[in-house]
Amino acid sequence: MASDRGWLVPEPRRVQTPFSYPETDCRVLPVELAVVHFTMSPVSRSPHGSDELRIRRWLLGKGRESSTHFVALRDGSLFQGASVDSRTWHAGGSDWFGIRGINYRSIGLDLENVGPLARGTDRWVNGYGGTYRGPDPQYLGSHGHEPYRVAQMTSFLHIVSMLANRFPVLSDRERWVGHEEIRRGKGDPGHAFPWGALKEVLAGASPGSIDWDQYPGVIDA
Image 1 (cartoon, rainbow, N blue to C red):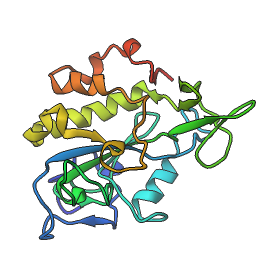
Image 2 (image 1 turned 90 degrees about the horizontal axis):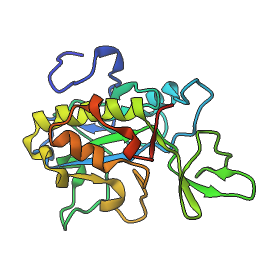
Image 3 (image 1 turned 90 degrees about the vertical axis):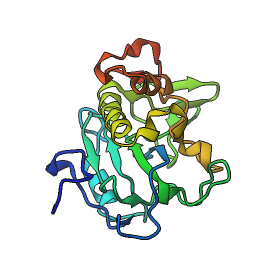
């Protein structure tokens, strides 16, 4: 990478996406918003369920034409797909209080997670119709959601803190939204995501000091 400016993770964890608007693009606007997503990645057979190869391939543009700035894997690994001075393709077609062009004015953050789960007769089924093979779901009525992991959320919250320091507007909890809040039909990051923990960090708490027992959607696994 020619310059470290705008890159918040070490070199080995940088996977430059081809789907971005460089900072020289006239459409790039000052950051006003951070949007939280899940990747819809199935649980892999690795010890922590992470699928680093799948995430790398996505960030390299091999698959769907979308991108993000950061991805926190289940095992706590953190990848960055673009400089925070650039903009990624993570929230196209979204609307925030009547404001469109969200990609041009926001940071995208993803968490490796398969997302919502449907209750079958003898199993939980993921969005691809396959059997869910992860930890016990966060349960809400007839629907479930893969829980997030402590290591994953701790890495994610470190980036939250760094972004709030870099972009003062992001120190405001109201500037952090789920994809589901700005685009109809989206469900991420879902009911398992600990918005209270994000608020704690924005208020000055250390990401490593969060009492995860109060957030049932996050497990130590």
